[in-house]
Image (cartoon, rainbow, N blue to C red; front, top):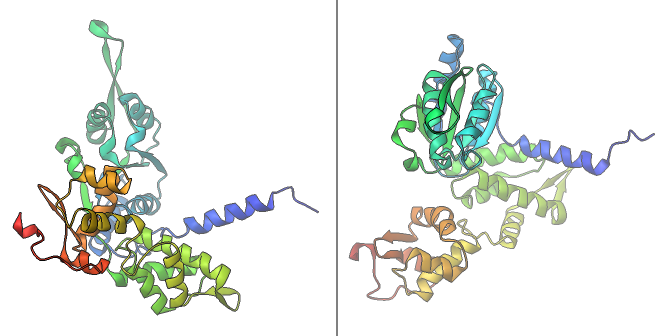
Length: 346
């Protein structure tokens, strides 16, 4: 007899639960960022012993390194509820006032991309973080009055990919600030091994190493590539008992299908390099011109593509624009021309 549930909906919920399980729930399970983990553990242990909310925490660093996961871990290890929001969603002081006034004692408030909050909300947050109260203006003009509203003590966890855009008064109100670094290949292999177990896929060490090598030092990318490899193996691969098993050939075939090359460059990365090298003869070329050439937004080029290309030494920035390095020419199989500009020349 049917229980009235939709089998497809139940399967979707199961898949969502599996994907959610890729996030570790404790600092002990969290791979990498060893120094930050130790600092956070001390902060949380001290707050637990003193039976108070933990100090406000600011997490900065490139996307995909675990800022949201660490915020969830802070709430889990503090045994407190978690409220999640984002800077772009807080565009008025009233938005923040409604959020803060609804917090329960000890609750952890996570604001992602906190640097994108409205300035009026930022200024309201100063008093809330220090004194756990806010002032609400009632009325307009000469008759406006300020009404103080006490808040429940809370812990704010802010995350930002651009800490330099945070005003100093806001940054200084965080009791603990951490910068997350890119992962080493060995750390990414540990992340992939844990995720493979959650996703029920057999992944030998050499296959884990191949995925890690293409993951750009970022766990989020490693997990995304692993899911694509899993999909490929489910359709085309072998099974070791009940579980699909991936080989290095499967990894190579899957990532080639999704345009991820041997060092993790995708289609847009190669398009940017190709434009600088072939279209503009190695540069320098301005950001906006480059964005129009590859058909992408300038902000996407600057925040998503460039950081990795600069980090691996394929692209350089100068006051006159972007310049391809000899390593970029070699990767594209193009001979570096004699007399081409180098960063040292500018």
